[in-house]
Image (cartoon, rainbow, N blue to C red; front, top):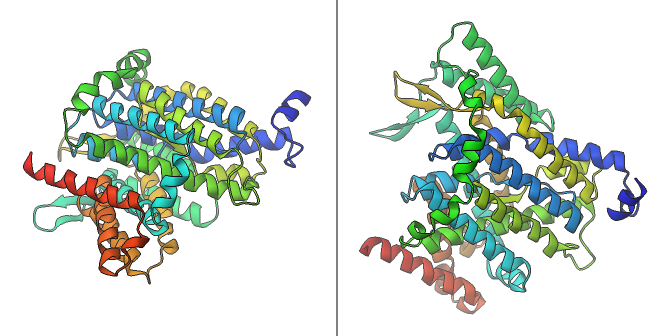
Length: 456
């Protein structure tokens, strides 16, 4: 135990092994919702849910181990919410790429992130983009995944006249989703750290019980779904390489890769700064101690995840729950990694959390996990308060970033619109010299992308 204490500098950071282990358990319980949510979302693309589940577990474990042993941070990682929605709804459903090609884009973005992490590019890129736009992207993704959550629950449905409208609130699956939403809101506002995982579990149990009592369109345990874990893994493992040719046959390829990289980069940077402040890992110059090593964990986790079969891995803000519990070292992250690995044992019950197909309406409902998307979206939207709404150069591109994400149903296109209008507004105000050259390059890049979309 003494060697463990010395290796992780537990005493120097004012902690104990017991505290670190408890912090790791707390963090894991706060973010365990990602297992059914990510598996369910990515499986909608046609990916085998077993392969996605295994990849989610292993990528999270690998990234957490690197974060713990190399960076010595009490920060856990897993496939990111929002970026998994981009993978599914924009890249696969929107651009029509196969999930293999989407994994190829994730892999390349992870390699680029690795290069940025070990070079001086990190600071240059961060400094180039206005802080307000970074917050706008985060808030926009929050609105985006909230919309998906409402759609998955059946609370919001498509309409030929008004585009969207309220769904059938009397449908059993919709009512179950509403129950989950109310429960997670109540638990969260009461300050429960495990609101998401408790709400998911309670909604699943209620749905199974109601199903046994004869209520239609309820989640149920599917014994056949417990088979084929290895088959699912073999289908997703290294599938990213098979998608390379298809990815680069599309003019959107660079655009997609950039979006994966951009969202991951700033999501991770923001999370690390937030939790680093609370864990005392910011030095007197305002920089993260071992910041490059922390980003290394994220980039390697993304590469591993893409090779195994899941979307971009990123640092989780839920790590703050473990830090509040006293976690200060990498032992907290290592504990989370071990718990993720042990979660492979719960795969047989995953069928309860997947979508419910109603043959009468031809609709797939996901009432058990929909509230997680809505709740996480609400937390991400809180970034709006950080935007300087009095500065027109930030107000207009931030607003356009958010609304275009929602109305085009595309995170990438929302980012593109915001990055085009920021230099335009600055130039119209006579402030062209204040714009970083990188922003002009990005503006031209996005304009060319939209032009090619029209011409090709």
